[in-house]
Length: 105
Image 1 (cartoon, rainbow, N blue to C red):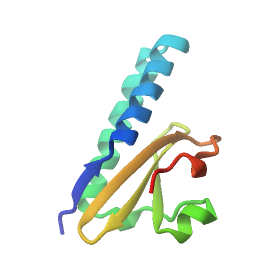
Image 2: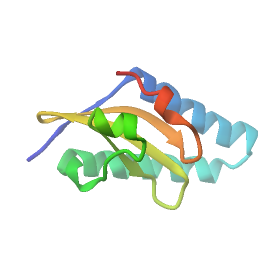
Image 3: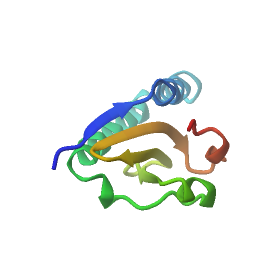
């Protein structure tokens, strides 16, 4: 089954902010490219089968049906929810960040 992938505006903003931080503050454009490649890979996997990823670690989000996918070799996670055959990507967060208060319903 192919799932429709919807990237929310908020998720786009968070991705842009993370890439900006990595490139301009950390001065590591290679890491930014790696992050974007990892996000693209996860998007492909979400379209194929979003259920391959685990529930969100945060109980509040888990109880609302959110799941998360870790970006390979990085400490970033994509938070999403599934509604029928549509996957809504709601954010990209650094693993140590308290992201539960930043996910839009």
